[in-house]
Length: 166
Image (tube, rainbow, N blue to C red):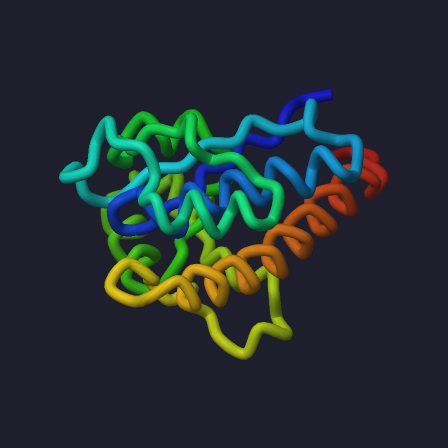
């Protein structure tokens, strides 16, 4: 079975997207399907390249039993559009930038992550970088909803029968 290749994207790859990578990894592991996924995260900018996630993001994730300390920030590259099936933007600004950067034939791969959490009441995971710990917890709540919704959608797509002649 082919792996689903997912790239979670935020601005600097030290808060939201590393948390999303960690949460999705845990959700897939809890469902016993982690081996079906290749999961990574990246940022639109390169100013944090090589750094571990923000210590507040690590603490918030750790409080939920998720270790993201081993991740290292990197910038989105054109090669990511070929490597990944979905590039999941944390907010509208990231979505617009990812779409503009995308080769025309890969634009369909760019999605807003919170589209997989229709009950969230927003399409943007707020950037908690300039706030306190409550912002990281709020972002994690939204991320968990979307991670579960994304997993359900991907597993449901796998279960659909292949149409004859397709």
